[in-house]
Length: 214
Image (cartoon, helix red, strand yellow):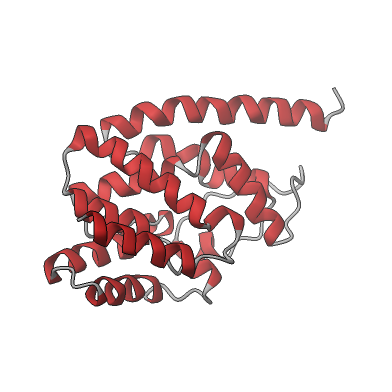
């Protein structure tokens, strides 16, 4: 098992060598570690959790012209190349296809204990101190303004609306980040999310205060 995990780590590090800082190898490593922490309580299939965590952002659609099948297909091809069992490959591919926040607009699709674990780990990396840093890193990458009081947050009702937003980064807190606490699947995920959620609320309080020059 450890040999195949190491091969996967090497593949991901090489593939994401020049990735945007919020979706690079270090993001993957954090999700991998958090998924392992959650799995200590949830007792999911260790191999499926590991592969899905390591490969979930191997080709993020945001950086690949919106192609939502490239990542799952790359993951499946790689796992086949290191002789992983077909059943495991299928499971990992389904997790990657269904775990993103934007796919939550489609309603309930595929789910499994392993997907819930990896999804929670990924969502936890989007909130708290690191989540804030990642939000502004991506906002800078897309050349978005930090905040514009005249542009109010939206309630996105479908995937296309969410994907096509160009709103200020602060709006992203209300359109996604502050929603994630109540979308956690596992008890471990819920517990970790509370502290990170509260930190974001404190951050926003300071942000608005400083914005007004106080």
